[in-house]
Structure formats: C-alpha cells, structure tokens
Amino acid sequence: MQLIGKVLEREKSAIVLVPEISLTPQMVDRFIARFGENKIALLHSKLSVGERYDEWKRIEKGEAKIVIGARSAIFAPVKDLGIVIIDEEHDTSYKSDMTPRYNAKEIALYLTKKNDIPLVLGSATPSIDTYYKLDKENSVITLRNRATGSKLPNVEVIDMKKELAIGNKSMLSIKLHDMIEQNLQKKKQTILFLNRRGYSTFVMCRDCGYTAKCNNCNITLTYHIKQDKLKCHYCGYERKNFTECPECHGKNIRYFGTGTEKLEAEINKLFPNAKTIRMDIDTVTKKNSYEDILNKFRDENIDILIGTQMVVKGHHFPNVTLVGVIAADSSMYMSDYRSNERTFGLLTQVAGRAGREEDEGNVIIQTYNPDSFPIECAKEQDYMKFYEQEIKLRQVLKYPPFCDIIKLEVSDIYEKNVSRVITEIYDKLLKLGGKSMSIYAPMPCPISKIKNRYRWRIIIKCRLRK
Image 1: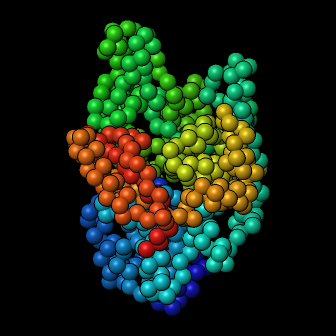
Image 2: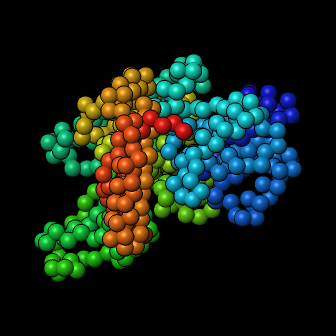
C-alpha cells in the first residue's frame, strides 16, 4: 500500500492481482479504507458483463487508478502503469489452462520490463522457480515477523495410523476433537481444511466391485448427500444415487473417501451446539457467495468454518485460534513433480490463518505420513529448509528451474484418432530432437477422458528457454 501510495503521488496507476475471487472482498475493503472508493476498480469473472464493461471504461478513462482482480485483470487498459503487485504468487491459478492460454506472471513481467517499473511478487511460500530465479538476482526481500507482531502458531502433527490402532475411526483425531471443544468454550473460532468437495469420493458395490463412473469422463463420481446425487467435478454430469447395484443388483453399497460435506455432517453430530459454515465450490454458486460466507464467519459469531483451499489463502480472522488439517496427504500423491511444493504451500498457508492477533494460535495436521519431508517442514514453518532440499532434488532429476517442461496434448472424441495423431507427432519429434531434449513416449493423460474427449500427451524436457 505504501508503494502504491508513492505511485499515485507520481500520478501513475497500479495493478494488484490476487489468486482467488474469494480474496478480493477483504482486499478491496482495505484499499477503499485507505485510498477511497473512486480510485479503485475491481475485475473478476463473477462480475456481470455490464459491471465489467463499466469498470473497464473507468480504467480506460483514467478515473480508477488501482485495479484489483484475479488473473485476467493483468489485461486492464491502465493509463500510466507505475507498479504491478502479485499476491500469493505461488498460486497455480495465475496460469490459464483455457483459451486464451497465458500465465499472468509472465505477462506482468513483460509489462513491467516494457514500462521500466517494479514488479512485486508476494508469498509466504514462494514457488521454487520464482525463489531460485530471484535469489540469483538478489531480488528477495524477507519479512521475518508477522505484520501484527503476533507469534507463529504452534503446530502439531498427528499420526492417523495410531488413531486407527486405538480404535478411533472418526475423521477427527482425539487431540483435534478436544481442542475444538476447548475453542468452543473459549468462544474462539476454528477453521477445518479438507481439500475435497462432496460427501464421499466414490461409491462402490462390495459384492461385484462396480464403481459409479462419469459417462463423459474417465473418473469416478463423487457423492453429494444433500441432493442425494452422484456428480462429476470435471464436466458437471450428475445422476441420482443408487441403493441397489446396477450390475449385480446387490444391496451391499459402500461409500469411500471423505469430502467437506461429510466433514460438516460429522462436526454437526459431534458438536451439535456449534454454529458451522462451509465454503467450497458447491456453496459459492451465487454471486457474492464468497463475500457472504466470509462476512458471516467474521461477523455472526460462527464457530467453525469448514472448507477446501478457498479458506487457505490470505484471510485475516482475528478470532481464529485453531486450524485443523483433516487429510494432509491428499495433495502429496498427484502425478506432478510439484506435489511436494503444493503440499508444503497449502499446509503452511492454512497454518498461517491461526493466531493472527493477540491470542496464541494452534494448528493440528492429521496425516498417515508424519515423517514425510513437506509435512515436517510445514510443521516447522521453515520455507528455507524445504526449499534447500527440494532444489537439490530438482537439480538431480532435471526438473524446473533446471529445465523447461513442455506438455503436448492431443484430444478427440475418437481415441483411434488421438492415438494416430500423437504417434505421428512423436515420430517427427524424435527426428527433430537433439541431445538437449528428452522426449517421452505418448501416454494417456492421468485422466484419460474429459467431456467425452480422449486425451493423450507427450512430455518433453529441454533447456531451450526461447
């Protein structure tokens, strides 16, 4: 804000990017309090076409000097740009995987170089690539204390294998249960983080093994209890739940996995007098839903906020003194070289929601792998320890930032077309590729079919920056 103040004094403008629309209301309130409403424009996908047009025109005429928004706000027609600030720069949502495909961070770098102005990237858990590059350029500024002067929270890791061994089959460890109880008595707030929507991850017949799958995507359907429906989180396909197996007509139907809906049901059962609210894609379908849920949690003495990664980033709730992570392992086994980085980032970010004012904060991380390195570093909230090990690993395995990775993806409604075309591309690449390139044979994508299109990919590792 001080930097932006200086930019405005020189009659220039600023762009501030945030990763999630849910973070903008809190951010906008702070900016309005300091700079006044007339100077600020807001750009994000939840605005109506008319609202977006009005904001765009205000920016174009130079009436709004500060643009705040999600990734597409980088394209705002700002007059006399003086600074670009990207908050939570590590967040993957700055990269668009839909047409037009772009990375807002790359565009910001281009704009700031072109205009010879500063680009500020902020994060408590910078992406490995960013930190490596800026450390080499001596462009890292480290904040050693919290803004409010409060201490970092106490973090404890609970081994859920031990909980099972003593007969605790609940989603909550005994320690987390007791701490929620204490928090309720003290009239303090709790955030529970589980990065999965719905009630159960999949539904299966125990007699014949039938699992409900999406008709359009090669993925299991998630059960949502409130509507008693099975839904695909990729294409939106849904069908009514079944109590009798469609294949063998058996009645032995079992629900596997857990999501935020199931967690909410369990919390309501265990703490019937507690006021709870849930924040995930299913509860923020209406306009301003994000704002309404966050304002309710802050202003209406709601005891427990249950949510996916929407609740992790950037929120400041002074009365939150306890954070519980229900399944810390869920992001660790994705088929992505950044899964360790994402796990560490999510856990450290969610831990940062606890004890942000005078009261001490506590964090409970529940996991089946308490000795895993990302969880160990998140417990200590030690970014440098994590970075130093991860960067060595990346160097040995030749992953970014020590190489570029290119993914070529082919999709079509007919799998034989995909197979034929991707094989032709692969054969041509092998003829073109030199020693500086590693070209991996075509394979189906981790989710091999989405929205009735079959998907195959080729991965290329190379050192060709341009």
